[in-house]
Length: 290
Length: 276
Image (cartoon, rainbow over all chains, first blue to last red):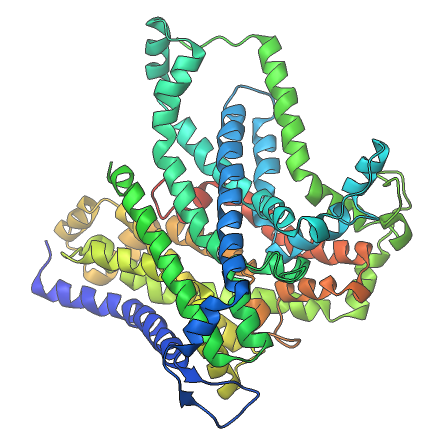
């Protein structure tokens, strides 16, 4: 029963949020776009010449960019693979009848609430350190050489840390979805002679598809801009071995004070995020409508 | 007809699930245990699990050697401040969209969600320069502003899904009984909306407390919340496992406790209502 009057009131109530978000989108992004065409370095004050696409050219042809792009993809896909498969398995396990289910659930969810800098430093120092870490101790106990995770396999180590943080998220959402599964449907299938495997493939998996797509979409948005974990563990190194796009832009703008180049990188990061978002929205569009 | 489960199978499930659960929780448990060790015990090989000299000295030292309470307070102010301001802006918007939906309400909601997909680095340079120009670097005010803006879409979305569930018939009934707009809002809607607002508050405090992009890049020492303070332990010369653990335990304990209360809201909030 929306009258003219209430519509006007509604518009008034919505406008602060819309205006703020619009300004937040348009002003800084517009400035980034503007800076990206300037030869603007904080170390060389005064000179802000317009140099066209040069910043983009330098950013994209820098070998570090290719590495960072590949690292970003590996990081996102690696974490998605571990958390989705691990999440499905864990959710199936937690959905079984057992004693102390509530407590186990709390234990599994806990890593999600740990701030990124804490989890990265705890893993770096107390687990992956080649001298004092628990992994080194386990390796020695079995007669192996200690493996220097963050020096020899920096990207893989970061994937492990990030996956540990996001596994609870996937598990929790998939578990919620599993618990909404109609048990009568399962029983009907069982009576019709469907074995456990057939029931899993033809009932459980289709039921979970929507939640799995939601998990993938939301995680991808967050995983594209992983920063703190890299910042406190490897600082992008050795070399650029664990630099992702986010970290590369940060290094360019705040460590090398290259406002122009950093801005060009920022715009490229936005474009990449948009491409991924559009592809994902297309892929899951059908699923979400249901 | 409930499915029968044998005790043997239930025992098997229990053992397996507890094993996996403890494995996943172990890094947190280990951090808590290490925070009660001496620095010597903390790096001992083989690791000392329970039989070590228990001490509280790390908690005392962290507070004495650094301004821990200040950083803790910064975290409280920034996470709570940004959430409360965000709620104040978002409640009217979500309210209007839920109760007076227009033709474009869905589009506005989707657009708000899309602002959340913009990566922080896309606006890092101008934000940093603006903060520098206006003297906002390393201030709590500046961080509250940024976090309010990045949280706003999630707050609107969460509130919208909660308000949507309030049946509009109840409003009509109240109107029939002669309730004025004011008493309608005060006595009918507010009591029904409070649980949703509380859940939104809880989840956003958690997200803001753990935010670690802007808090790391826009603060130095004065306004640094715990995320940035803990990051200062990554410098190799300042590395003391027991102290790091004590600082970490204090930083994550409040959120672990809040988080356990918010398990159900977490799913809805983080999936924008797509999974309930």
